[in-house]
Every structure is written in structure tokens, then in C-alpha cells.
Length: 185
Image (cartoon, rainbow, N blue to C red):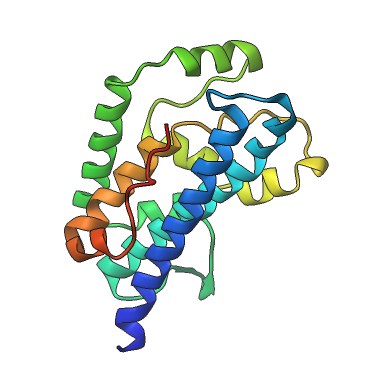
């Protein structure tokens, strides 16, 4: 298998692994059997979710453009910027899919979080990508943070909006890794 064929699929599979870790950690931190001793797993859950999103976006970019995403010739983690460089049709479909999922979502958990934190979560894909793109720095090094709140929500909805175009281009990848753990309930 050539490097060009192998790398995007490997990126995708790594994204799935980080996603799985994010869901498992989030479930342990905030799931039905909530135990305060595991609440600190919310932070690594968010970092894993952001890593998954970065790799999904890089996979999609590679599938569309046939090259790795770079800024000024260097590898970049900025998937907000990457999103802007995807084809306009892809961006529009992703934004529509995200908007539709938010429209049909029970927002009570988000409203509680916003009330408790006094931080509003964006309700559009672009606004969320703007927040999520800085998770690596802002959350990995939260001990150095200025205390600014970051509403990192809607991971499943963002994930679904980027998975759809990937799987349209590569439907065979649906079976390359298990999708049974996509949503842990």
C-alpha cells in the first residue's frame, strides 16, 4: 500500500481512537454513575476530543486536496483555519448538518452549563471550531490559563458533521474500525 493511500486512513483510524477515548473518559467523568472522584477526567476527555477533531479535519483536507494541511509551509493544528480551506460545498454541507443536529438537540444540559459557568456556547459550527481549535494549548496547560472560560461542547455534533463528508469519500472506512462505540450511553 502506498504512503498516499495509507496515511489518510491511518489519520482517520487515529481520530477514531482519540474519539473513543474522549467518549469513555467523558462517560466516566459525567455519566449516569457519576462519581466526583472521576470528574477530573473531563479535561483529558476534551483534549482527546480535540485531537480527534484535528485528525478528522486533516483527513478530510487530505482527501479533498491530496496533500497535508500546512500554514506557511509548516504543519498546523489549526483546524478552524483548515475548515476555511475546504471546498465551499463541503463547508456548506457540514454547516447545514451541524445546524440541523443542534436544532433537533435537547439543549437542557447546555443551558445548565451556560448558567453555571456564565459562558455561552456558540450555536454554529464555525463558532464551535473557533473554540475547539485552541484546546491543545488552553486545556493541556490549563494551569497556566488566565481563567477564561471555554465552552467546549457539541463534540458529537461536530464529529458527525466532519465524519459525513469523509465517509462519503471513503465509505469503505466505515468498516475499517468499529463504529459500535461511537456513542456511549
